[in-house]
Length: 382
Ligand SMILES: C[C@H](CCC[C@@H](C)[C@H]1CC[C@H]2[C@@H]3[C@H](O)C[C@@H]4C[C@H](O)CC[C@]4(C)[C@H]3C[C@H](O)[C@]12C)C(=O)SCCNC(=O)CCNC(=O)[C@H](O)C(C)(C)COP(=O)(O)OP(=O)(O)OC[C@H]1O[C@@H](n2cnc3c(N)ncnc32)[C@H](O)[C@@H]1OP(=O)(O)O
Image 1 (cartoon, protein in one colour):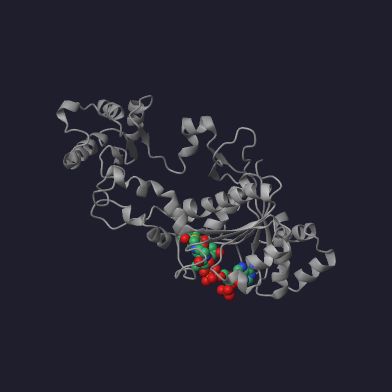
Image 2 (cartoon, protein in one colour):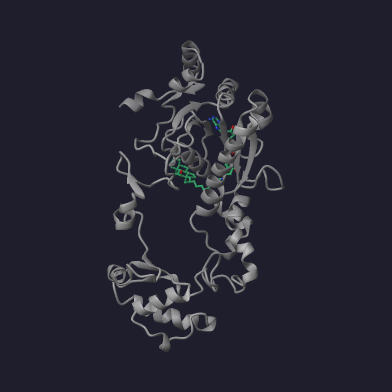
């Protein structure tokens, strides 16, 4: 796999850093998540393929152990508020001094500088600060955050993984590590570059929810079908729009022009009425094999059985029967091989990882009996 041989220490976080770690693990990196001790369960739902070491970082000996893990690894991924790592003496300067090849990734909401750097926040705040949230939502409604996809995952976890891969690539030439300051505000904004760079085209001149791609246009929207399901329509180009009209059993001559914005509300009413006359399945039969850009809105449970997804193996079931998306993109020679077994228990690999990182058996037992480290091998064997 592309990242085979790369060792990553991931400090346990909420959502973006775990996703970043999972991407790296899917593509072959060895990802060791450092968890807290004495917690009943992890909140990391993106733990596929990771190992877990539990350390009490409120104890200087726990911090010293973490330091040893970090300086012997390729990447450290930390999701804390600015200053937390420095307070423990594990800031980038301290660690890079000991391992100049280390890639030190800091994944935060607001970045390492600026007046918000130390403020708490979540996806919705970062998205708001990126400018993008102001554009999301239906006409005359308040801004609407699309789950926590944009800042946490696209602008946060994924961008940070991208930064790590870039830094690894650069290190292969320079031999030097570096610090990655991954701000979710900036990552989200960058993902949204199209919004800024397409303003000159007039794509966003109208209020929120009244433009071509923000649910303003009736030919770029979702519609309810007679069985209470939904259909997605993305028929922008005239030749595709024609096929949509044909499939709906309508005649262009009876309709306003596609790009007549003032007629969009009326056109939407027509589409709504027609889509409501058949089930989702019936519409799929009408549109499959055409270029009308019409697809079913599938639920998370339905994706696995859709013939297209099945043909590509786009989703898979792990050993617990849980459905997940296959890692993307697909590399021809060194594709990702996502781990199919269950997620690690907190501290499941404490003993084996510490041993691998050069701790003596007696030292390990001492750390465990002092409660500085915690091991849950037994639980894993049950
Ligand atoms: C919208 C998303 C978030 C969605 C996540 C949800 C899915 C989950 C959020 C809450 C979960 C529930 C909850 O935990 C309660 C239940 C728990 C149960 O186990 C499971 C069910 C739960 C209901 C559970 C269910 C779900 O999992 C949840 C609902 C996001 O937007 S995530 C993005 C957040 N932002 C960032 O990541 C940006 C960077 N980070 C930050 O800004 C801050 O970290 C943050 C997120 C604001 C949190 O601030 P906080 O004050 O809590 O921490 P920090 O200042 O960063 O400092 C960390 C301190 O922790 C110490 N520490 C770290 N590791 C250890 C260790 N191994 N041992 C000891 N101590 C440790 C560290 O030293 C710091 O201590 P100090 O504060 O003293 O310096």
